[in-house]
Image (cartoon, rainbow, N blue to C red; front, side, top):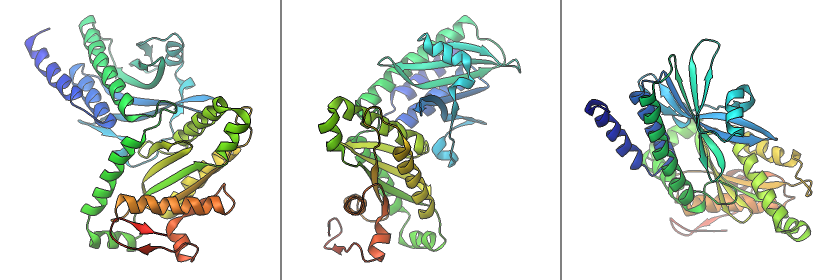
Length: 346
């Protein structure tokens, strides 16, 4: 490999290996592949299962001369069934790490599944009009090895081992960033946005109803399966730019980005219905209760407390429902007394 090629390669490898966040890691590998192998298009996809079908959804991609994520785009992307790409389906079934397909337009696509612990939840797509020579293929393989290793490191530290969702530690970090961003905007800007009906950020706490009964009646193996299936429904019910966490036990937390309170309620209700309508093996019907609150300039402890109180109200008043904290307070169904900036007693 020539020095001209080696210098940018080393630069990109340094960039990849210094990341401590999945989105930044995705951006780094997309940028590296786009520049080094002169690909026409590079995308990082996430794979998720919904109602027994595997879906493919873009997470980060090249747009013009820059890389963007679904969070930057600010829109929803439901994804598409992976069955639309038979070469990729066949490659995954054979546990391949590189699958090449030729489109009807003559463009060549390299599908690069990222295998971690015998599972694949991430896949890279590299599109180019001409095939790559052996040197370019070796370069791609080397970049992917580094990317795969760092995916594993981040997954181990950030994710819950049972459900694969982000864990409590990761929630603390990401939630603090969202609250800090709200604080930086200033009270006047916050008020202007509120009056204009602009989009907001929302935190929801989700709890599986009567989960102890599931464990007691069917055993912990079926209880774990319920947790995994609810986690899958969470993934498929929310957008890529949102964040879903397993908080502990049967409790989950969702950070919902950039939407109105009406749309936030609809999104949470859609998830609640998805769970209610899902057939859980052996267990049958399972429901969830949801409490949510707006992410404002108050401290993380207070905001989480608001969502928790809305959740407890939902569980105490019939379960299988979605409750909004501010609405409950305005209706006089919840009362709060603020004692200082960080603690709120109910």
